[in-house]
Amino acid sequence: MSATTTTTSTTGEQTTPPAKPVRTAKGPRALRPGRIVLVAVLTVAALYFLLPVYWLVIAATKSNASLYSSFGLWFDAPQLLHNLGKVFSYDNHVYLQWALNSLLYAGVGAVLATLLSAAAGFALAKYRFAGREAVFKFVLAGVLLPSTALALPLYLMFSKLGLTNTYWAVLIPSVVSPFGVYLCRIYAESAVPDTVLEAARVDGAREERIFFTLVLRMMTPALVTVFLFQFVHIWNNYFLPLVMLSDDRKYPITLGLVTWKEASDRVPELTQYTIGGAFVSVIPLAIAMLVLQRYWRTGLTEGSVKE
Image 1 (cartoon, rainbow, N blue to C red):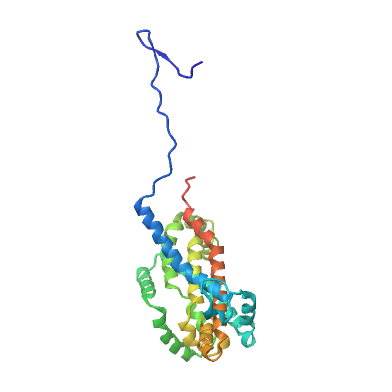
Image 2 (spheres, rainbow, N blue to C red):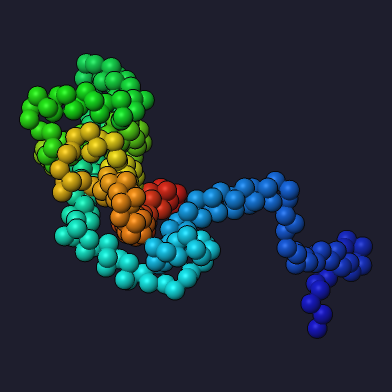
């Protein structure tokens, strides 16, 4: 039986409907010149950023002598564990102390800065009070000021308070993030509905409970962004600890490695210890990025599916 159906016209003649056009499989899409240029630029940018990391990994496996006598982008008798053991044990385990200091400054400072930024950004976005826009403009002015310009005034103020050469001298300035306040306000305006806040108030929830149980969950992608920015900023901060601290046991990793590099003229093996220490210092940043990046994807896709 033929699969083609026929119809009878008014004259009694049978007519066959026109056949549907057959779709052919499309071949691979041709690469446009603009796409090729974009891929090439992104590839060059990726190599530009990854090449120093690759060199650092290779150099951390070499001895101090082979750093200058072998090809810099390939292994030469790798001894990574031996080198790291020397890094951690040198000068009565001072590197471990620096690592703990960096975790204290960056971890505690980033968490407190994120909470403070979330509270300030939420208040500026959802509460109406006199001078709100003036406060927000003041925060924006803080974004434009470089942190190095504030180091000397902070030192003079902390010196009057007797806080120089203490952990507080690095921690207190680290809990303030003008960029975090700006980002949290922008995100709270769009991600925290006023109807949800009003419903929570009608149910009898206090403002602090609304903030900690509802608002923080809705603002998770922005808070992760603020935390990572502040964590990386504090972890890599060099100038503020240099100004505030004089006890090398309170140094973060960044400042400690510079002291090793400056002393490498007298102690040549410190060159290899500096490279090994820099390699270890990258690992916490990479872990934080890999663990927290899923929250960014969640925030980007939130609301993209209509229920």
